[in-house]
Length: 200
Image (cartoon, rainbow, N blue to C red; front, side):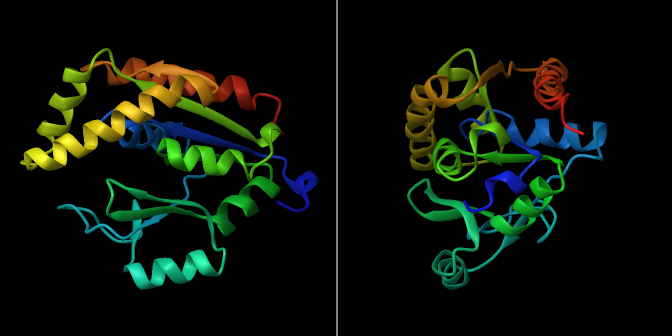
């Protein structure tokens, strides 16, 4: 990325496999810290019940997403669960970092690896959410609703790869224990505050 010296803020990446609680943690952080930036990402997957376009995701079709890739409008993108595109829109994040802001983003490990190649290390902090065991993660995925066995299997295969990389490439690891979301949020918040305390 050009003009790295213009970036004075911190991009905080919250990573981890599907079902680990990334979205829940970010929802709590939004309430606790409205001064932080929470940019919306883009996806080609269908909205889940209750999801509105422009709130958590920009829901777009694959042709539009591929145009954004071609025009380099995404900071990172990946194909998740072998079928849907997910990506981080570049412009609002870069602008917020230029303004010295703290920016919070949820991505998978593929996304984190891509961002690490683009955003300078001094402006990037990664937090990986972990769970105590595989069955705990399976239970959480199943509790989201009636998913076919093949979908659960696919998500668990993705999770295996993410857990393998999480400890290697992330700056911090925070446990996300069942029925202990408050502690997880508090732990993540502490990491962010420690990492951004010198930001003006």
